[in-house]
Amino acid sequence: MAKRVKEPAAPDVDVTGLLKRIRVALERRGMSQGDLARTLGVRAATVSEWFTRNRIPHSTVLLRLPSILGVSHAWLFSEEGEASRNADDWRQVSQELRRALSAIRTQCDTLLQSVPDPQSTGRRR
Image (cartoon, rainbow, N blue to C red):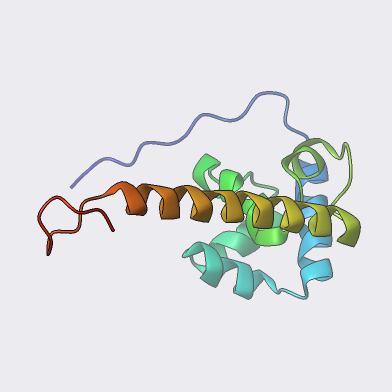
């Protein structure tokens, strides 16, 4: 049987503060601990133990929490900055992504036009 390796404790982590912010983020998202456990693919008892035993989630889980909970890394781990982006921030990100996607489409179209048509001999599309 493989020996289970215990991950070393993270230095200088405010466990109580981290768990409080996870709880706040869950409430804002309308998620239960069970919902979070299902999303993460862990047992509900594991998530429950974080809160009842004041345990830090595994590092792989910690890295996924901000995106699942819709919060910034800075806020979740240090309570600095905003808990989440506001609607104007998301609109700006959305507009930037649309512009980038449009530029990518234009470049793809240009590249496709320069590829020889396999049905013809030497003619371009």
